[in-house]
Figure 1 (cartoon, one colour):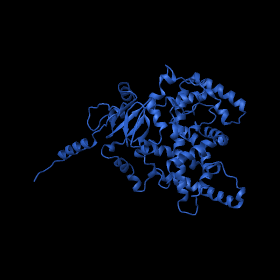
Figure 2 (cartoon, one colour):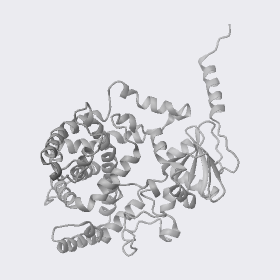
Figure 3 (cartoon, helix red, strand yellow):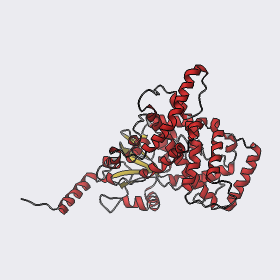
Figure 4 (cartoon, helix red, strand yellow):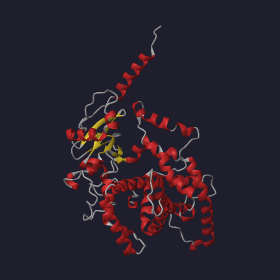
Length: 446
């Protein structure tokens, strides 16, 4: 009888893993950057030395190259090859790449609407109505600042800027999403805001188990869900309880007023107008609250992060703060306290600061996609196969000297004051919000 030790089994497992996961590069594919550690490949440098590692790879291999991380080949794209991804949405899919590491469908099990529906809803019903709701946004931004900061007659220490800004941002967004009546409840606003903190850690967990099998990462990540724990459930319960009487009231108004019913300018009323809204069905409200979470998570999380970054960028430059203050005073005098979207867009110095802050936000590579057609050949001649994961070297694109000048690496708050290029404009060089069909639908909130 042959005895096999645990060490021998481990060695056999490692050898099999190496053979199975060994990268296989086809003809005309982008060059695979050499690596020295089998199985691990470039994973360590990718995790702990990202900026230097990716920059050196681009300098040596050009705008299109591949690296081996977490047991799979990933192609990194920059400049012209990057923009091709945005121009060809039928070949590249961002949603499937996101689902691999962030199982939102299991976190929000009541919603069966596709991500495309949420993007269209955010674009049409939230961003598209910002000019209508700008008064609501202004009112509750001011209220959030007054509640959280006050008049500041005395110096005030803020120990966690993100927590503070997250609440200030959550208040107007909650009013836009569910209306003033429901958003008058502080626990509902807090639930929408805290959702970002509770889901955020799941976004940054490295998929180490990809080395064995991709599905294993999702399986381990969702084990707590199978035993009844979810970072979403307590927030869902709060929002459902607060929305139920508001929904019943609006349904009663619709029945009594008929054609004379005047719809509310919020997302809740839009959900109630959908054919699949049936308040007699169990968990009907849970379904639409999960839809609401899909939008509120992205809206509050990204907006508050961008606002905190801009706040720090401004706070460290007193001379900039003075100029922005003078612009705000002149702006307030002209609009006499009543703000329109056009008025906000005329604050060119503030807009320039926000755009420059977003440009320096620190995302080195992001916006992962999957190649979903049989193969795709870039204009440079390189071909990638179906299923290949790609990531976009956005930092290189946003610091390109040909687009932003020889001082592109510097932070210049008023770089765009005379450029007629607002922070919310999506173009081929300014890819903060992505591009093409899958550009962020909520960019106007910034």
